[in-house]
Length: 367
Image (cartoon, rainbow, N blue to C red; front, side, top):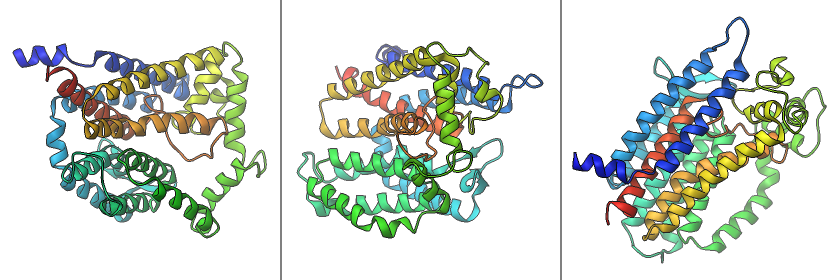
């Protein structure tokens, strides 16, 4: 009873309620994106509703599991993730142009989502076993870089370029903050620029088209169709929007992937500039609260782990919102809490649950 009281007393209720509020907003607009008069409550709406309930359970479980125990299992667990990524290439479930899922009956699991939350545990535990201070040599990062690149290559082969970019960027930011030499990143950037013409030929044809569309090429009703319809939906929302369930681009099915990658456009069309701005501000408050918690932590490696657990959520928000506005190429990254998708939702809840465990361990329960 005493432990339970302390658990709920030091629980990060601010982040929890913001998370739930954002999830409910997402559920409302998934309802709108999939609404049909003959079937108001679509299978996607029902699955997402159950997914939120399951996500809350996952959040509380992860909040109760000591993150230090998870770190100790980091090597074993991440090896399992790599095995699942490899398994997906041969026996994975095919859908949406890729072989990315493992079908376990009632729902499908996307192993690449696991890499986003478990790589930080693996990386920080690796660094923790070497030194407490940030004075690592470049050679000590080679195993981490090798594992990160292997993860990215396996995800690219599915193919899932969006998630691969997210895992790569999240991992790179984590290593940057862990004091990997800045010269390494400079030389890596130069290498990417030099090898870009060669790397271009390794992209799938549809991936090349997305880059070309971003650069302004392609026909309006063919290659540019997705981004053009997204911009029309966002622009037609005006100041206050067309109203709930009244978005014509969505209801007339001009807007592709409206329940997943382009749900931001649905929000913009139906709630307008005011509603979209309110959603962005809500995300910024949520992220600011998490970052302030990280700054209050007193150990660099624990700060690194906490940041690693949430960076994929922050990057997903930035990339998705920029993507639907045409500021970045379309890469298929969902909007956290808002887009339909159980794997992404549950991984996001798990990340925040472990983050909450760190908060309780270091900011409150130690006092």
